[in-house]
Image (cartoon, rainbow, N blue to C red; front, side):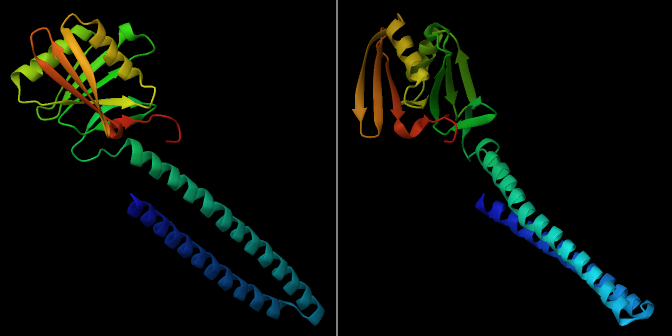
Length: 230
């Protein structure tokens, strides 16, 4: 992305230089013609000096206008290029091997694990949404029922060779994490669960009433910040 930004700036500087060169060349030719006209038409030295002073004043005004356009316009365009580049780097470029977790304010946030969980709610845990991503099979399971969500997890750990599934959260006071806890604490499918502290996160061990073990890993590096300016 830095290369693209530098290329844009270099391209703009080259274009600006060409435009300025053309303007200066045109003005020099025009001034040369005016000077020749002054020499030919002005009969006295005094009349010639007055015409030359008027020409000098007009040229000074043109130089000031061109300089203002260049020195004010260039920073403005550079600033706009930075904004566009920054926006595109966040929202429009998809990291290789990743998939979209959710979208907020026109920005898409991505995940990368083979199996992942993402939960969200609007302040009401009973209306939480649960998503399970399967990168290998390119599928997304989505439900508003925590029982269906946990049944799906149990089925995955029972019938596939999966050791753990990763959880994606948003910021420190994560509503999605609370949705996960709400599901675990209220489901009739769960027999017990415990949280193992890791150096870079935590591992939630869940045992279902059918004796299936579900391991949910929550790494701090998978904590997504959606705050403005981050």
